[in-house]
Amino acid sequence: MNSMIFTKTPLKKKKPVIHGTNNMGKYYNNEKVVIKNFTDLVDKNLVKFVTSLNIYQHTNNGFHINFIEEQEIFKKINSKKSIIDEMLQNLRLTKLTIENVYQEKYGDVNASGIGDFLRGSYFLLQFCEQFNFSYNINMLNHPISKFLEIYQDKEESESSIYSNVSIFRTRNFKPVLLEDGILTNIYNYKINICFLYFLYFHICKIHAKSVVDDNIKNDKKIYAYIISYPNTPIKEKHKLYMQQLLKPTTEFLSIINNTLDDLGLVQKEFVVIHIRYGDKFLLNNEENIDLEHIKIIDKSIELLDPGQPVLLISDNTIIKDLIVKKYPFIKTHFNEITHTGEGVEIDCDKLKNTMLDFYLFSFSEKILAFSVYCHGTGFSKWVAETYSIPYTCRFLP
Image (cartoon, rainbow, N blue to C red; front, side, top):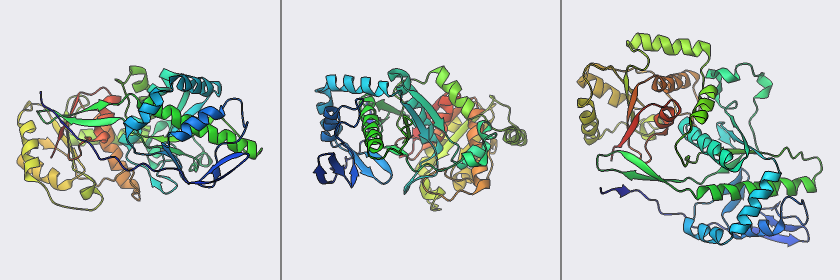
């Protein structure tokens, strides 16, 4: 079967700025990274090798992995397997905890949507299980936490924006378009090695600073923002873990159930059609609709069981209006929604409507998604994964 693979031209490699050296080590962008004999747990030869890869760039927002040619990195990494094993052993000795943090901003970097954060959390759960690290998923600092039961007993003072979150930018996803228009993907399992280097480089920084300043507490925890794709099918225990985190408050569950009643829908007895038409409409109010896209959606609607209830969810009210006028049996609502990331100033009512859609996905029997993005739509995809809902996503070219 023929397939079309979407690829992006990699950005040019950015090398760290070296400002000078002294007998304590090198300075990268005015921050000391390598310090002589700073700890027995971090071998300076390993640090030297990690630095030589030039895959990290330090900014005020933490350590970022650069988008560069993967083959160049992996060629070097594969030639140093003994160093990788030693590095992994040293990291385990630190009894490290990795916490994936969701908040609106990380310095001057905006968070992306809740779907991206969920997939990154699954990547972290899988990575930590494979390599025996502790983990935590933290959504307390994002406004969606007000709808989550797990955070309702937290004191107001416990919510504080982290300034020391390191951003792991690498993603292991190459979208593939199948002949029937369904999007699938090819995973790059070598991302685990990249993430290992990311952790090691961060631990080097922590230990280096703690030697220079005795007042710096090393709690052996890395706060990170991770939106990488998980490498393998999601295990049931990881789904249950995320379901517990995402459990809505009693008050919000009542709103969800009332909405289902108003729409005449019963849990697990309706199909959702989800159309992700892109941020041009959601963020910029662009109103252009491609009629070829409507034809693609029509084909799927016409194949549905006419007796099964259908709920339409979309980020585009124009498309909603077109479809429900053509197919009056399809149910929808026209509540205003918002993006949960991308620097959008979040309106509480719009966020409530967005989270309402999130949970309506979770109560469906099946989800048929459509997206103008070649990566699909994470908003419905990772709800489907979390609640084991059959799912397909078709590309709208």
